[in-house]
Image (cartoon, rainbow, N blue to C red; front, side, top):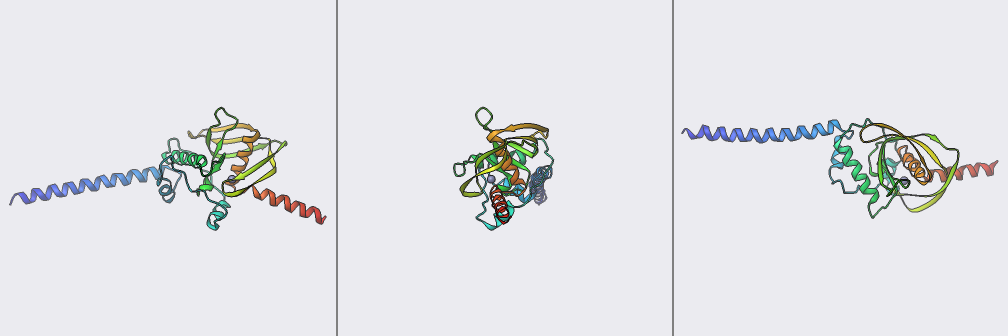
Length: 222
Ligand SMILES: [Zn+2]
């Protein structure tokens, strides 16, 4: 008869230990999400994959994707050591380097996240590394233009030559430590920055072709 309360106590104690452990795990996950720039839904999508897993790339061929690609992305405060932001950056690099895409740059909205984040292949650096930039913006454009052939991961199967890209740009951004940086970028790498930063404003490179066609139409009228 004395054993019953003892068993009950052990069972109860173990049960409350399991519950406490679960509570701790939930607390830890909530803490990570609270510290991160990603909401719960985004965090779930993000943590579905490992750092080497590419995201699905949104394309204009899908109506829902198309609407998102036309939306404006948002800026945010970079918290150093935001583990979800680090994971997102790694998966963004994996996406642009994926054999199915093989791009030279990508922006966060192209993988379904409306955040001011881009990944660029630095053709102007040794070994042409892929680098991620947070809250990038262009504060100065050179008057000198460079014609360049462009394609886009979100617009499969086409390439066009544009004559609207500046040869050099003054770039501002934050690095993963949250430090504000300035950099002058030139040549082809500057074109990639201009293309990807356009994505953050819902602009696709083909818009410049339409703009040109529109200007030509106006020219004919006059
Ligand atoms: Zn693009």
